[in-house]
Amino acid sequence: MSTDPNPPPQSRGSRYGYSAKVRLWVEIGGQRLSLGQVGPDRLYFDEPKSLLAQRATLVIEVDGEADRYEIKILGETAAASSTDVRYEKSAS
View (tube, rainbow, N blue to C red):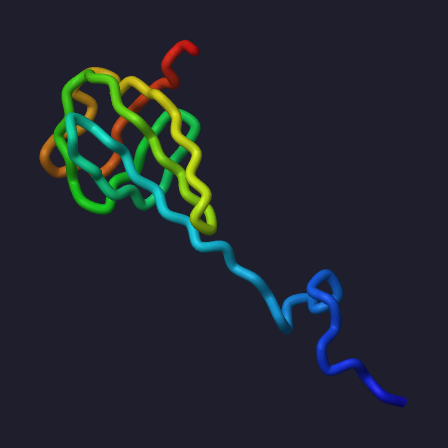
């Protein structure tokens, strides 16, 4: 019995797993701030941030394809020692 050494991608399973390259950041006032995670109403920064209420652009890039979302940072939501900031999606 012979086995195909190059099975099609959909049949490779975890042995030949695939992991997408994901990058997250926020663009605020000409700055690009790196994110560790994004929740439905919170941004989780890699480093502590202190931000005032303002408009920003959330960028989620998966395998080089970027989606951009206009958001609003809510109030002074992060102290100098905090890494999470509340936000809401801007009205379209």
